[in-house]
Structure formats: structure tokens, C-alpha cells
Amino acid sequence: MEQFEIFKKRINNLINIDLNLYKENQMLRRITSLMKRNGFDSFEEYYAHLETDRSLLDQFIDYLTINVSEFFRNPSQWEVLQKDILPSIITKLNRPLNIWSSACSTGEEPYSLAMLLTKFYRLEEINILATDIDTVAIEKAKKGIYDEKAISKVPIEFLDRFFENYHKSYKIKDEIKNTVRFERIDLLKDPFPKHMDLILCRNVIIYFTSEAKDMIYTKFYNSLNDNGILFVGSTEQILTPEKYSFKPVKTFFYTKYER
Image (tube, rainbow, N blue to C red; front, side, top):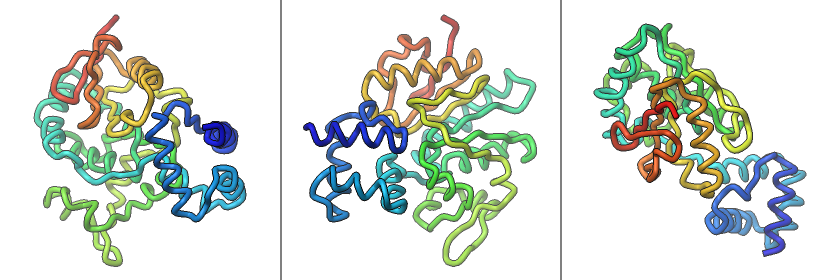
């Protein structure tokens, strides 16, 4: 579809996001749906307004980057992380972990991890890098205010200790906020941080093409320390982990080994 091809090129120039690295049919459906919801009948008309209307552009980026999250999403995986993965890593290292939440959306994942780590470390020893492509989502994450649905899976011990009521919502206390550092990173284009012991990348890889996945998994390999762990989403098991020099240690958890 020629109009959509032109639209993708213009979007890349405007916001530096290459839509060619996302699954074509899936992305076309999502963008067409959003375009029509906003009352536009053509990609040309839609782009013209995206170029001049910052709020419309922010909505587009937020929708494009699939910001769906909640605290302790897929609780059984967090249980494996707590009981098996973290103790195994911690016993090997005589220092706090270097951790990266690589598609953090509005902050539920890194804050969940910070709370969980209080079972192993003092608060001042916890330091998590949390990144996302969407700067609007990052600003929401920094504020740390969530509705009742988002916090529905938070264990009561954490809810009582680390949240406070805030205008019919819930706000993360500063002691947890201070353990997380938020930055913008585009997984498809930007350099990755180095020397990570644990990387979380959950429920985002599914939207990328095979070529983009290959690139990202290779960059994750280079980002991890030896024996570091990659934690992926419930729909994102790596079918051939050895292709990237990973091996499974538990379902959804992969360890790096030397090539």
C-alpha cells in the first residue's frame, strides 16, 4: 500500500521510529484503527495533523508502543524470579545486581522488581535502569500514580509498605521511586547498556519482525555479563535460544553462555 509506505518514511523522519521493523499487518491495523478513531480518512491527512498537533502525536506514540502494563504481571513468573532466579544470581555475586527493565512502559515492571528486591537487599543497594521509547510513558512512570486495576496483583505486604492513597489512586512512595532510573532507549536503534546481570524484556518483542528480533537478542547478549539472565514475556519464548548463545534455565528465563 503506497500511502502507508510513504507514511512510514515520514514517521521515521518525524519521530525516528522505523515502522518497517514492526510486523506489517499488525501495525497497519493498529494505525488505521487509531487514524479512523480520530476522524481521518487518509494517511496523508493524518500525518499532516501529527506533524502540527503535539497531543495527537503523543497519542500516536503511546498507542504505537503498546503501553499495556500492570504490577506483577503474570504472577507465577515473578514467583520463579523470586524463588529460583534471583537467589541463584545473588549467590554468585558479592555485590548488588545491575538490572535493566528494557521496555518499562509506565513503570509498573521496574517498580515491581524494586519491591521484590527488598527481600534480598537494603533499599539503598537497589539500582534499576528502566527504559522505554515513549517519553510520555516515562513521565507517567516518574510520577508513579496508578489506579486500582494496575495494583490489583501487588502483594498486600508491598501495598501496605510502598504505596500511599492519592486522590482515589495509589502513589508509589519515594523510597521505591529512588531505586529506579528512567531513560529513553529505542531497542531498535540505540546502543544498549553494558554489564547487566538481569534484563527484563517482556511483551514487546512479539510486535517486531524476525530481523528485528535477531538484532535485539544479539544486542541483549552483548549487554549481559557472563551467566546473566534474560527474562522474556509469556508469549515470547525463544524457540532457538542457542542461535543467540542463550540457554533456558526456567520457562521464560535464559542465561547467557560464552560463544
